[in-house]
Every structure is written in structure tokens, then in C-alpha cells.
Image 1 (cartoon, one colour):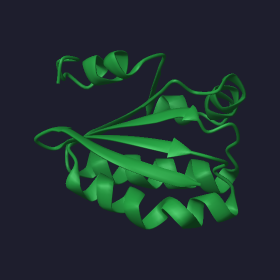
Image 2: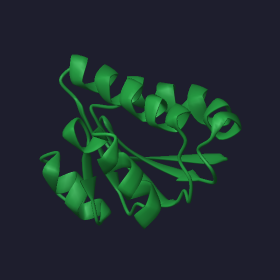
Image 3: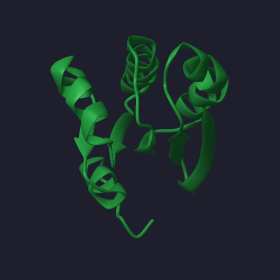
Length: 116
């Protein structure tokens, strides 16, 4: 599992996750993912290269989203693999974290200009 972090503006971070978000994958990216959540007000997560997500991956996303919400921030997920999106919606993640088709939609839902 790989993680890539790209600042898009003040307190706005794009995180790209690549690989399986299973036990090993979540352990590999957790420190940097947590750091990204702590540094951001808006975090958008590209899941286009994440073909599998286990419950530990869902926990990682939800923990980050809850931390962001506590400080008035937000997280949006986008470009999910269809099977990953199905799991996220079936488990109710979409009730806490927006799931969007594109990065621009995720940013717009967070009140950020997509041109950022």
C-alpha cells in the first residue's frame, strides 16, 4: 500500500491511496494518513487505485473523518472502485463521509473551489 500527499491550498490536502487497504495496507499508511488528517481542514481521498478495502481500512477512514469533524473540518472520498464503493455504502460510511465521482465534486462538496 502506498500513500501520496499533495497540498492543494492552505489546510487542503489531497491523499492518494494505492493498493489493498487490508491489515497490512492500513498499517503501512496509517501514520501518514493520521498526519494528513491532523494537518488538514479539508481532506480529499483518491481511492481510484484501491481495489480492496477491509474493515480495518474503513476504521482508518472513519477515525480520520471523526478527527476532522471534531475540529470543524471535512473529508471526501472520490473515484472509488465500484466494489469498494459498494462496501462503503453498505457499511454506512457514506452517512459520515461524502463519496463523490471526481476530485472536483469532493472539493465542491467541502466548499472549496475545484480550481484549487
